Image (cartoon, rainbow, N blue to C red):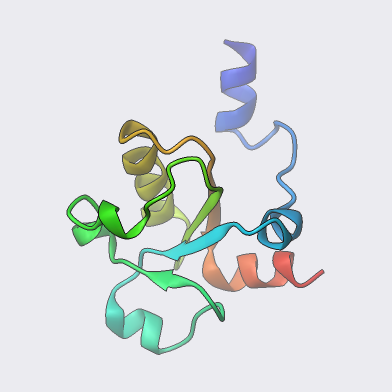
Length: 106
């Protein structure tokens, strides 16, 4: 239970997003097409949160690392839960896309 609380509060082990990307992780941007067109991480995939459930077939390998992102981190957290509940094993909430972009360029 303590570990769950730590993870919930962001106090758990830090995720090395740059290493995940180097290892071939998919960056999944769950913002709308319009938001995505206004700026996004190069190489990311855009599937809006409201259509994610019906487009899971685009994410074929359920064991490949996936980093979700959006504008602030709220939709990406929801996307992580959707993916996890559909059997995806390595899903990380990267939060806001702009902040994530900074983390993977280090």
